[in-house]
Length: 310
Image 1: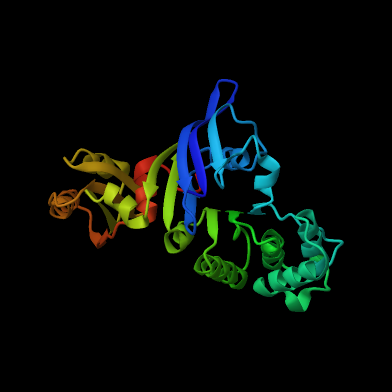
Image 2: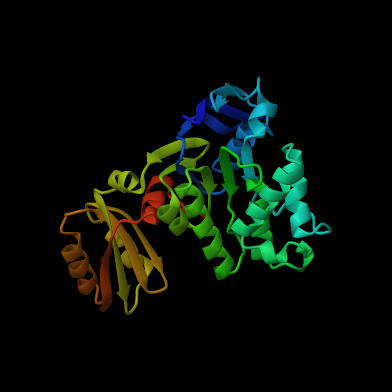
């Protein structure tokens, strides 16, 4: 294993921010780390990077204990932070060169790596321009170039596509795929569920400081395969109807947004027929009804009771 996190704990007063987390990152995989706001993801990342003191447990990276070998370990990690971390008064090439020097690159090798990183980020033609003139997407791509210049063994990407244009987002996602094909190991956090489903080899879901689920997308879907999501658009509806639906045996949850009912219920329970009968008996017209396939979004909602952005 490239990274081994064992029984990790972080407390802030009475708050247990990270609650005995166990997690492994395999060499060559993209591990997605998902969780609603306040789940403990950022605190876990900060401890992994040696930025936050560990209150309990251990972190082993590249076979070495983090506390004993922090400086050596950090040299082999590339970080793409959520906040853009570049110098706007340096050119794109100077930015990448600066970060390369921090990792002891110099001379011809440094120049070669700068060219390589900028080309990978599609910024070679912009190498002599200042980032203050760049779009948000270009700045994020420069962030990635700075993180890759030293050929890290582990790449940590913290929401790298937040707030950027579709073209830059597509490029970044393509870049992540390319890195994976080259054998890179990536820890990836995102608030876009479709990114995680599309990119990640495995996904860890955190909530209330704990890892509550871990596996491939298909394995996570199996956790809630006993349920189905039924979406019904009606001509009119009120919360009296919602409460009636909630009383049906097999219904776990029912929500109403404008004229759309969303029902989470036991699979193969004849629920569709019973819902149609109940809604019709209530004198409400059904406009449309769909039984949706299980998605990573529905898995997340089922496990945490919240959406990814809550």
